[in-house]
Length: 388
Image 1 (cartoon, helix red, strand yellow):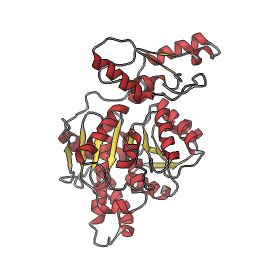
Image 2: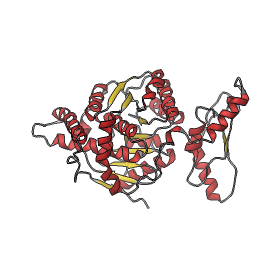
Image 3: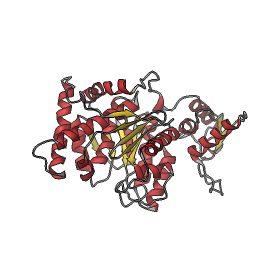
Image 4: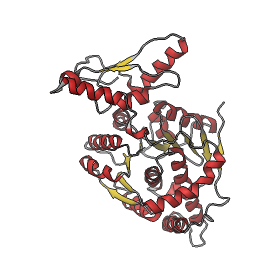
């Protein structure tokens, strides 16, 4: 599963994605083959490994765990703890509502209520975000009615996750010290069952960034992965194209291919994926919706993409029982505010737009607080994408 000091040949480390592919191949064969995983499994990751490895038709029958038991001070107690963890769903899926609606129209109708819930709950969001955009992102967070904290120090996550907010990992200004801090924070929020958002900014720009993507994907569970086409392709492992910095670059995929990319990654990771662009594609691995709201100025102001990741985290913390609806609500509030801002008479370009945008987010917040959904009526441009 993962590389360990006792494994000398690490060329074929498969992780959860590779395990899932093997399980699906066994299911295709029609044979009943018992399967277990081995390699780097311990109390901190066994629940996630079993959950993310599961294919639609077959799951692992168990885990072969050696070092985490034999190296423990009390092997019997360690084994009992591992057995309990294996029999229990991971914290980040315990609150999911199995009866949540999958009908697109019903979901869209629910958005104003989720926005109102957010401004009433006032969630905390812990940003491990790039310093170029920190001020803008914090102001956007305040404007929607949430509370931001900008801390790159992973050890603080153990305390911050107690507030049941969200964690946002944004690797825009990556340093050598960043990955271990990210991993400590991810583990704390995963164990608490709080949402974690991953924004793999510039994922394909350098070999170092590509390596960090693999490290983080192997190191924890992300409730939402949000990125442009190039970033999502890199996370999915389907891109050999080097990105030009953090720019999205020209598209290499048509609409159906983008929707399929988002769906397949979400299905593999068993989470939510948001592929952003002129048209956004949102998927939970089963359904895909296209959202055509927004404005071109969003792509001309540094930090707007990063802020969307944080806003999504706020909504996930507010409504964890239906993550798809939470992210859809975040996206629509955000992009309708952008349309409102761009329509202001005094907005002449990206500079004046940025200020107006924060004002319009605040205006929606105030309307939602009063139960006024006039800002939303007739505005959502959401359609279901069929990939059959």
